[in-house]
Length: 277
Image 1 (spheres, one colour):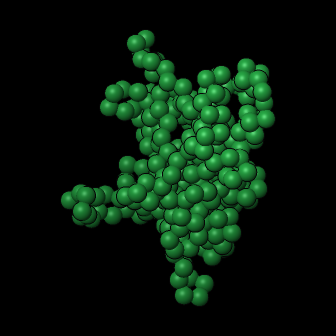
Image 2 (cartoon, rainbow, N blue to C red):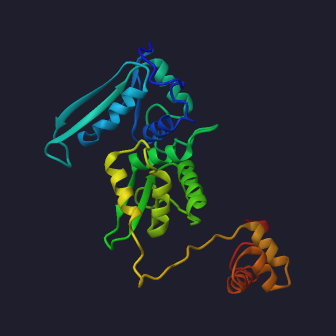
Image 3 (cartoon, rainbow, N blue to C red):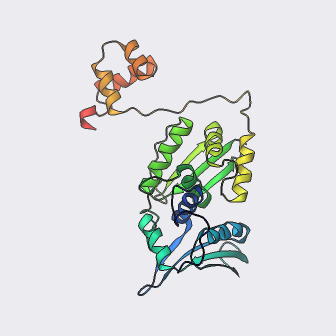
C-alpha cells in the first residue's frame, strides 16, 4: 500500500529524469526476487559510501521500503560495510517488472524500455551501476560500460554515436562473454558532459570524476586518430554502381583512397557483396 507520493508523477514514469536514472541503475545493479504467492522483494546492495543514493531511491518510491546496513567478510575484503535498499510491495515490483526488470537472472535479458524515456538519465543510471568513469594510466579520460545484454550494448553505441560522432562495433569477449564498451579522450569527455549535467541525480563520486574529466585538454604532441566509420550495404551498392570515384567519395563523405580500397576488396572477393550480407 502506498504511504506517500514524492511528487505528482506516477511511480516509475520514465519521462521523469530521476525515475529514468533509477530504472537504469536497477536494471544493472538491482535484484528482483520472486517469492511464494504474492511475496518477493527488490534489493540493491552498495558500498556504504553510496548510501545516499539508496535513500534517494527510498524517497522516490511511494511504497514502504527500507535501507539497512551490515558488515561482513568477503573474498575481496575482510570487513565490507554495505547498505541495502529493499522494496517488497507487489504493486511496485509489478510496475518495475512490466517496464523491463526481470525476476531472477537478468544480465542478458535487460533492454532499454519501450516508449518514451529520459535517455541520458537512463544511460547515466547504467553507467553509475555497471560502468567506469575516470582517467586511464596515461592520463586521458575514459568512460566505459560492461554489459551482457546485446540490446543494451547496441543502444549505448547508438546513443554515444549521436553525441560524440564516434562509431563503435563491439562483440562479446571470449573470456567472460560480455561487451566491453569504451570511449576515451574527447569522446569520453563529450559523453560525460552530456550524461552528468549540473544538478542531475548520480553517484556523488562519479559526478566528481565527470567534473574532473571536463577540465582535460589534449596535449599538443598527442596525435588525433579519427575513429573508423563502418561501411553499410547501401554505401557498398552506391560505390559499385558509380563510375566516378571522386564524385562517389564526395557523396559518401569518405576519402577517395578509402573508396578505392573498398571497391577493390569488393570486386576481388575480399568482402561479401551487398546482396550476400
